[in-house]
Length: 381
Image (cartoon, rainbow, N blue to C red; front, side):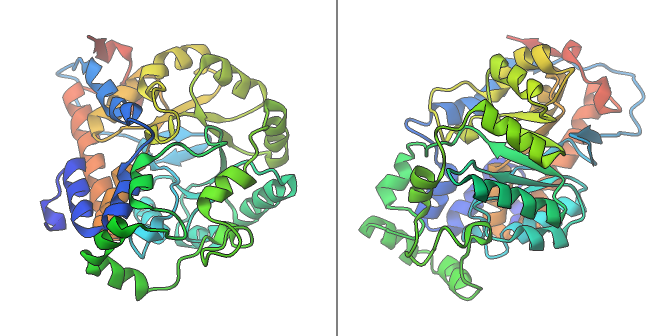
């Protein structure tokens, strides 16, 4: 399968599956428990229909948005995700370059494989740093200070991951960092030699944001132990309020799903919230972000920027979320599969397809700018 044969999310997923060893593909593709929430994330968009208008004069389309003070050329951004250089040796470098080309925001994770400093040097576009709340408060402050010195615009604290989700696909293959593969997992690597050649002929795998704490050589700590031992399950709203004050810039909570929590985020001075169930990878059976969007926008949408992610595979999904009141939409697997399949050209092709789909969808909806999208354009079945 060639990159030119990829015309949608499923095509990129299939190409990535052909290239990646099974345990790594399943790490990206998998979710928690029975993967009910993972499936529901995309299905939720199908319960809602678009109602187009015609004869509106749509020769010029402006799909730019401003979210948390950042101007984006398109209403979709690349959510921070972990371990990207495991999928393709370019990792975050490819995503940063592609996001810069398309004038949108991208994020580096605490579990990112390229340093904040290097990522900042690649793209001058808006950059998010996604981090976790550690038991070591000094480490939290040091991470924020590092991000500030680098010039990161938005801090994004993930609040739905105080413990790791039950990802049974990883248990079956033995996938872990460092690798602890079982026999079935090792055989999967053996039959995909191209990935192994790519992986072992480039620089060693690192987690630059956490080098002093997580050792990929099997020394200090594995990623699973990182989640269970270093992250702080006692984190409270008071702890986060202190971080918002310390950062004194755009601060976003990722993983908010209830109206009550959205109101608290406003109270402590957050600039944005991301409605997210972590791609179905944490609490299986939790609600899809799109299903929660309307009630949270109604409660706080005039006071804080409401963003959502999870299950977004089409430009029409983005238009539905924006019509309900989201300011922007994050994507994860949507760019990870093309990254794994083809590196930077893959990510660029995926973002170009999304841009084209949004532009086409807006024309067919009779909207020349994002502000013209509203709930008048939607009907729920």
